[in-house]
Image (cartoon, one colour):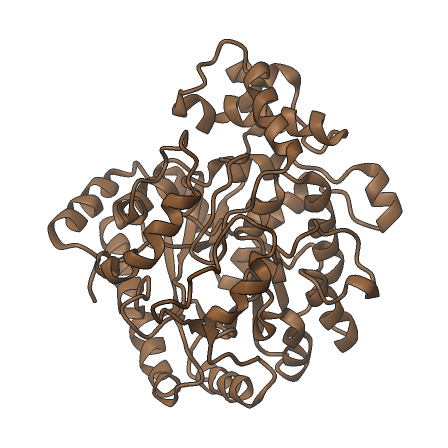
Length: 468
């Protein structure tokens, strides 16, 4: 998974670089006698170790702290990549069964992008609730997950708020309470949704309000034509598929934030999770509004999903004014210009961002380094954007092994990725912003025999997507 050109419905697959192609071949050599077509091997820690070692070789530095024997010795791989963090994944998805109308748009994209040798996705059924249970709770060390959805008021919506909440309620009824939390998605440019927020807060008990400032996708026939493809210019074309965008600091955004504040006084969530980035550089998806909004609403926590990362061509490097208009630099600039100090009320989320930079380790070091400097080590939170990439365990393991080289720390002022910082990112930071009892979450995960998974899967087979 780490070296594959996978993608979500929000961006086209990134073509593998020459270094990544070479790393794929080298990882097979490092794996010794392991069969090339054994998915269990390559999805496990032996395969992860081989991939990370190959990346180190191709990019000329020890970005991943993995011993050579971990590619062939299971015990060494477990020791190198294992950990005891209470992992909290704040960005997970699955698709409701009614997504048949969307399939006509998405399935051809997925199939066109899928290499012949990749058999990980045959159709949208691979993103259903049963696969969600497998990828998030069975094959990943996820103690708590937050279920969310892409935007939309029509049938193309992944999950509606009642379906998200019903999924959380079902898991609470069948297994340990609190292993799944839920967002409520809001389209603030519609008055009826602002009015509905009070009922959603009381009935569905979301831990955060999820918003997409670039609006929602325009699924009018023909809009997507010519906008998806492997060429680097696709990002310049994709921004046109969004409609009805707004920003957190314009009148629409401020009215929404006033509503959040109003409902917060009666127990509603005071956390706003804004999709920022992965938009083809759509203007209203820029994180440039985070600084002004966080200053004017210091009582609200803002979580920037994807941290403003964009696939805009060249890999990200160090921050400078010359590139302040690109990618995560836009977030850095917004916070600097607004005087928002690290450790304030702005959080950077790593879903998909980490997947996209893990095989480009120089970029990974710059992105993580810049975010840690800008928001602080207490304000970076873990997310996978699963289940688009399958089980998130390889992403967790790769993050555990990653380090920012000393020379980059010294040149650019980045902090060392000490184990304590990694634990904050994988665990305690999200517990703080989402109000999770970390000790209870740890006990729930450690004592959970996962027997409820079978009941939840049976429920899905009988009744489909959980209903409120």
